[in-house]
Image (cartoon, rainbow, N blue to C red; front, top):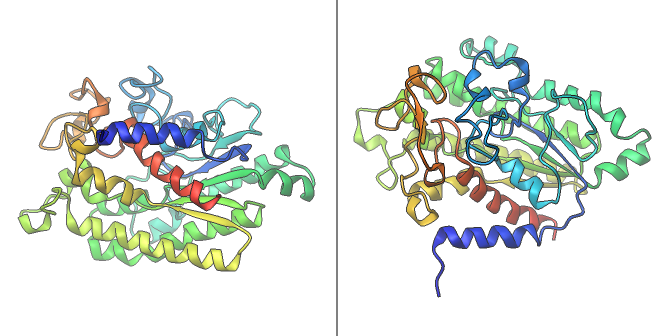
Length: 360
């Protein structure tokens, strides 16, 4: 008997929880809003206050936690599969972080904000807590995790480091500042280099197991579809309705990132670096949303203020004029920029299989 696609993935998810080796005793996460479990909320969230209240968090936590979704994120599912607790935010109340901590901040960039401003990206920057600052936080925390080089080596040998997704905001800020696709494409190598440099710095600090996600198919984002529409029907992919050029752009970023990671694998043969294919995991939802249980398709947001894709910049999710759908599990897109818990769960299933293959 053939299982429906969504049911199949739930079964696979259950199997993965019981098949991933539980040799990881801690988990460290770096990145942006796709991974933030509450850091940005603790900075005051002045530019994005809606994440401090429902409907954010409505599905799983029943309250807002600082996660930019209706529920859990990919990193939450990874932690659960590894038998670890949900990662506390680094900027939260001080506690024992020996089993892991999250340094990711919503709005964070791979490149330092100063470098972005020098390149002409001077609008919409939500935070200065870029990847380099998150690494400094890790350095500040490290002495409390281990003392000697031998102790650190033993400890980090059983730790998983998730670096990203990161870099998406470098491009978001640039595109929404009015830069052309050619202009934004020109600094993709610098963004990728910033990510690769962070990975290498973590290796230098003792990391031996790293998971590095690529970029999402941003051409399928309700925000991009709304804010950067085209009058030419040929600019849209007939298979899914996504903007083709933006997805080509995302694949370019991912290709450069893969190349950079391969270089690091060659330079550090003892280190295991797993590439997390967020693009491949999500584009299948756009091609066949109903197959995965997304009855309302992949492009329209669950929570928003109207419009063809239910995304309205002046009535974003959590703001006056916007409202959330009844059942987010039927949607891929949560608020026009971020995805639903249901989508993140299926992405995590794919990533966990890749992680299992790397460490088998």
